[in-house]
Amino acid sequence: MFHDAIGVLTCWDDTGLTVEGRGGRVVQFAEELLVAGKPVPPFPARRVALPATDPVELQRTAARGWLAIEQEPLGDWLLRASAGFTRRANSVQALGDPGLPLDAALDRVRAWYAARGLPAYVELTTPGSPPELAAELDRLGAALAPTAVRVAPLGEPARAAAPESWRQVRLARTAGPEWLALYRRVDPDESVEEAARRVIHGGPSVWFAHVPGPDGAPLAIGRLVVDGAWAGFGAVEVVPAARRRGLATTLMAVLASRAAEEGATGGYLQVEADNAAAIALYDRLGFTTSHTYHYARLPQR
Image 1: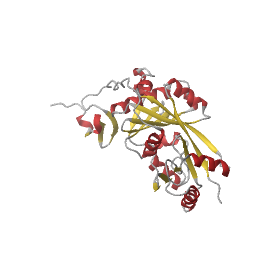
Image 2: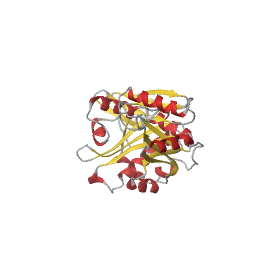
Image 3: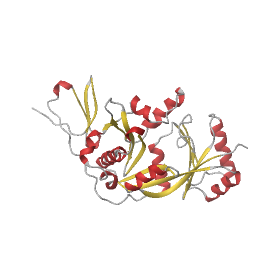
Image 4: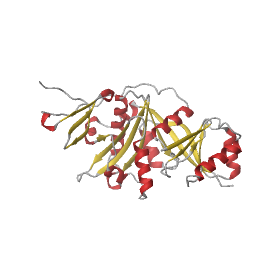
């Protein structure tokens, strides 16, 4: 008697095959039991409206999708540290009330990061952070680095690439060494690299995509994290020699379809305000700006 295993082939090695189906059901079987295989058309992302949310909740969703190694609440604020790997995982998310007068809260932030040998960064969200915080950071002369949070219904990026191009994309639950090699933020310092691996793999439901080149090395990579109705896209990189071939668009389409398979209906991503090439891509994929946030480095007293 034969049985079908329909889903994403996440592993094929000496131990056998692993297929992850809809709803997270995992099927494993020995290679000698494989009779035949064929590509299955991707799950169609429906044209539905964005999930209801606001900047505060979306920022908190994004924090779960890029999970800091160490976290500690400060009232409604969230202190985050990950050996210095990315400002997002090494900054205080200043949403709501810290439960202390502002000066005392900022002193607590400085001390917490100093104890870990890290600079004290504040994630200032507009709207969402206390209005007096922005004024205080301005008074302190803290330089601000703006980032836009952009959102789109998943049906938009999922339909941006022809389905026949999707077969070149490979999906996995873990980031292999070649994926990490193309992801330029990994640091040669061993402690930072370990932190990077933990942060990259952290989140409710994380997927890694790549397009292999002729030698097997990835030409393009991307990361997806699914958290309920929302899917976060990130780490989209294409090697210079393979740009302008639509690989980033295809990766985004496959990841959007994967997220829809898990029940998500909206996508979000974070892009630095001066990254014109990425912004142009996301414009074409139907993303619009929800809100902005800034990273500000607190001066020491």
